[in-house]
Image (cartoon, rainbow, N blue to C red; front, side, top):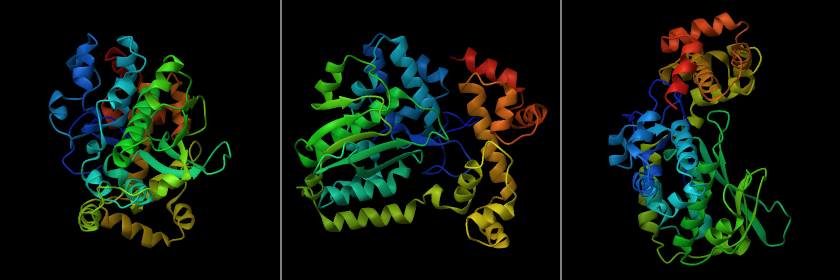
Length: 361
């Protein structure tokens, strides 16, 4: 499964094994496995593309580096457009397999059933990228005996990318086939955008009907597939891998800073709520909330500042919204306040930050 983010450190390798709170959503460099040779085969310059989006070529030397998911996704969309390759996401998915999930794959492979594998992947997908989630929903068409395996990106943290969605959903499908050793009983595919390629290309890749402009990206499969047994099942190996994941990685969304960031983000645009109001929404005493944040080496003010910084950077560099509109979206009462904050965060004015991002594109 392929496919969060923010400025400053965009494209740099992170020192920690997983993204922390207060920085842009990230994704493991394994998601770009096969990207450079594919671009070269299409007549493009992968190094030039990587440089343009602030991703070092050294980052792709291994699978465990962390890069901005926004830079990752925007690069895929740009490469597809510039190389005249509308099915770039699907082509990249064809070059990948479950091993791109690294430590998560080591717990998924020895699962006994598809249900067990999905539960593990859903629980620990944040190790690959905290901006992505998978789940099991009811079939959107109310077909008997059918469920939807959903694939979502957190759009409040990183913009939508058609190519990244096709890469992610395409890889989701390939993983299912790889684990089951056969077709996952696919009844239809749901894509959240219109066709990028001729419809026959999608039919050839998925082998099933594809429905476009749908609310949620998903693979709609026969419910019985959840009980399918894996030939690779090994309970001892699975438990050891789960212990490693649980002991090594912590989901940033479950930290107090992550919960606060989400609570504040849900109230924007509009005024930033005081700490006491957020504490009440989390059913916790304000002092207890502050103590938790101290343990996580941050403060309420820092969480809010990080959230504003990250969203401001995204709106300035990826949209044509006016700076007055952006100020309102991040909870500033005046454009001048946004301008002062942007200079503090990035050392340049909002206009210069936008100009530089467009020149680099």
